[in-house]
Image (cartoon, rainbow, N blue to C red; front, top):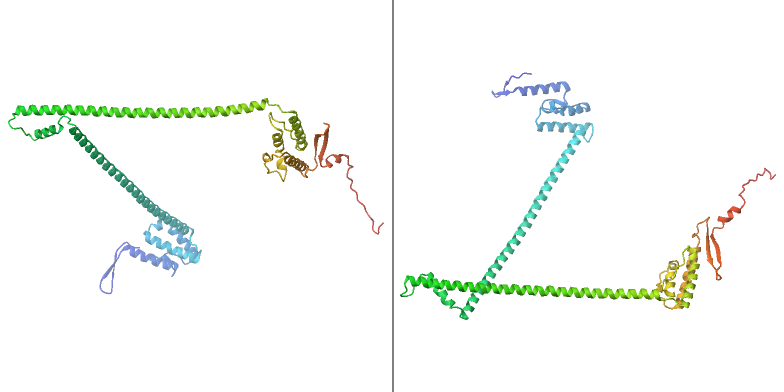
Length: 418
């Protein structure tokens, strides 16, 4: 290959300049066609990277990813070459294309997704910025409106104060307080440098000074009167506050005394109740009734290994019956939800109590209460006070030790019944 520029004559009489790189490109293309024949190239301009067979396609893909080969092309040409190789790969090797191409596509998709998310985030930020701007503008507008209202109120207050001052001056004038109208008129004359007829400069100055001194005295008197009025008003407010505080303190003290009285009365009632319970002794009939109740309860308590309850000091027989039987009330199907405190009739309570005891004993004796292979001991007292011991459960739990050992045998019969 030569690095000399060639000038090729054309049919129209002109000459075309062929740079050295064009000559080299033509030479490379001819060399590629001579070497590989009339095949399809990934770089058809230079006859490089044949893509006619699987071997050539894989080799072209490997070479185009090497730096020395890829650096010879611009980004657009390099992308076109890779695209031809990928198309040939999909056509002759695998439809999904080269693995690197798939990774590039995935990376490109991820890049597009990232750009899309960035655009959405930017749009959200813009929308949020617009919303915040609107909120700030609305808040500022409200603040401005409030400020304008405050200015209007201040102007109205100032107008009211001016009107009040004018009204007070008119009232002072109406009361004949020091010829204030005449003094204002003289002040206006003095300000305008008016002088009375025949009045000298010295007399004019003395008169103005005297009038100013009189005005200052009146102003000082008015200020002292205003100060006394303000002090009196403040003293009245402080006195009102002291009265309110004293009234609140009196109310709190009354409430505390009432609460203490209520607490004292409740405490006294509770002490009296406990004292009555401690001092009141049951009669003989109550003692007999309580003993009979404990005896009935002991019959069912023995089935559950429970201790027989003891009557509390001052507890009536009926209250003791309710408390003692309520423990076994859930065992009764018919009366497990009834309110025993609502039963005031003695005969009705006797019937309900008997059913609850019967159901509780039946529940204790029900199959499955005592596990198989076990036996339970139960002691009770009869009418004479003797202790009777009963056992419940599986009889095999104690008879098995007296049973003969099990024997297993076999009978062999000969053929023919012999």
